[in-house]
Length: 181
Ligand SMILES: [Zn+2]
Image (cartoon, rainbow, N blue to C red):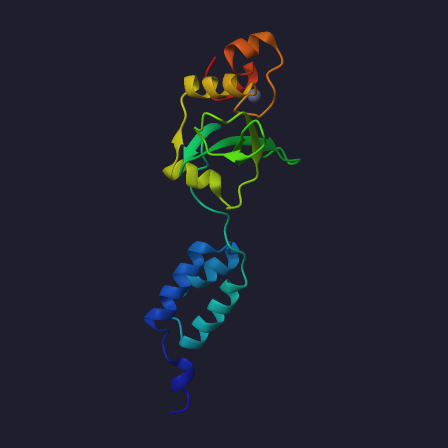
């Protein structure tokens, strides 16, 4: 029979691959429905579905973003901040703290020579998700101590210019955001 090849059922490997792609890709409802509603699938249909799914964009990283505030992970400090997009969506992002001594040389977090802090964009992507999974969120007193030490709010990175904020170690807006009052 010459039709055997065309009508050969999809292999388990193909089905597994399709399920994996359905999970990781942004798939249109119509295509998802077409694939999931099929009671039988030939090998060539499976190949067609795999090609179509591979053409779909990958989903954004799943999971929960870390809370606003300051986080410690792998000996580094991160500030988790957020901004509002033009479509009014709140997006969280992370900045990593780079500490410098008085002469400008970079020193590690916790080094007593640390004099200044700069907040820079982390090289790795998806840091806000990794922090939520494996980072440690600093307590408010810890954030306040760092803010006073470096004379800048450790949540937003701004200089503490109001005396009350200097004394408290954190600006009122940031304090409210991270759950203080
Ligand atoms: Zn602030």
